[in-house]
Length: 77
Image (cartoon, rainbow, N blue to C red; front, side):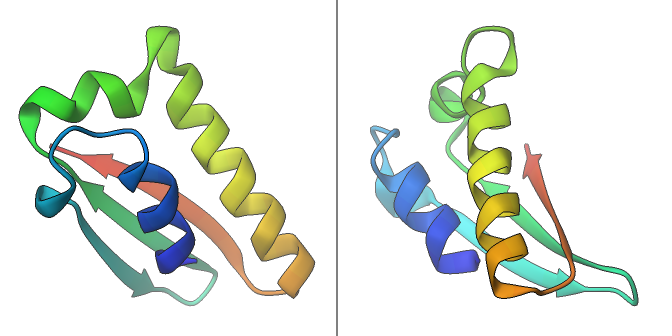
């Protein structure tokens, strides 16, 4: 899932070298934390959060197909 988030976000941002994706696993879920450059934050979130919601939807669908735990995508600042 981490690689999927990296590929999706890499296509959106102006500063792909500043993308930082980390993966944490809890008992019930896998948490993907995404950090981008401050000037790219708006591009990743999108108007009214539409891009962020789309990223989360794609990742959740991929996780459901794999049959893995619940996946949470956190966009950090």
